[in-house]
Length: 84
Image (cartoon, rainbow, N blue to C red; front, side, top):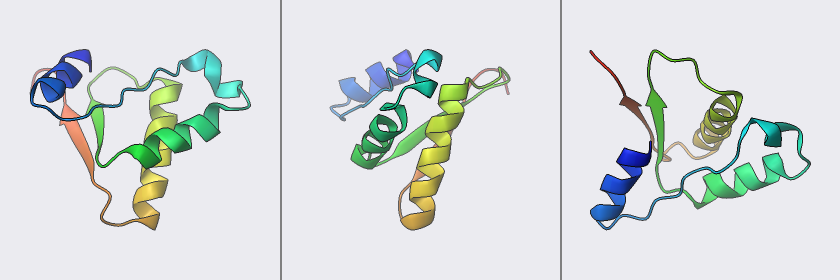
C-alpha cells in the first residue's frame, strides 16, 4: 500500500491513505471519519492478496461499496498483490 501510494504521489496524484486501525472500530467517530474519507475520494483502490483482510480494510471496502451503489460512476479498482 505504501509503495503504491508513493508511486501515485510521484505521478502527481493526490493520495489519501487510511490511518484507522482495528482499535478504532468501536470508537464513536470511526464510521463518521471513514464516511468522510471515502467521500473525499475520486477513486477507491482496494488491495487484494492471499492474506486475510483486516476488519478495518473490510469496513473501508464496505463504505466504498455503499457509495458505489449510490453513485454508480464511483470507481472501485482492485489491485492484485503477490504472485499470479
